[in-house]
Length: 176
Image (cartoon, rainbow, N blue to C red):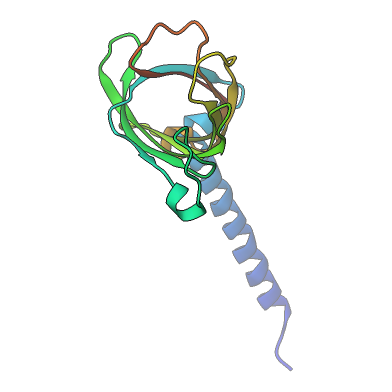
């Protein structure tokens, strides 16, 4: 019968070496990702969206709806530039698809808006928005992100006192 003790010792050594390597790899990942090493950090990004590339897709012909005010299920697609609110320089894009939920209040649900900031990453958030005035500002949850925003949580708001007349005005609050 062959001896078993040296094999157990060898397995134990391999296990210890593997765990040590894994630990070093995790430390390296945490150090390389500043958001992972500072869990209580938050930042605010203020952007403006000139509504330039917005397409309304009516679905009335599919549902039999003939209302000139629009029909439940209509959707809006957009791929608009985002400008830094202070410098007015383009810093990214807003990509969205919103579905009309209520015709009377012009309520749309936008399940996966994506803010792509050049060289930084993407922020994904869910929005319920009235595309008419008279409704209070709301706060929408961040549901995902990439790059610098990987693992971020927070919210996106549109300031009630916005004076930007050409489209959207968004304040993004990233919480860590």
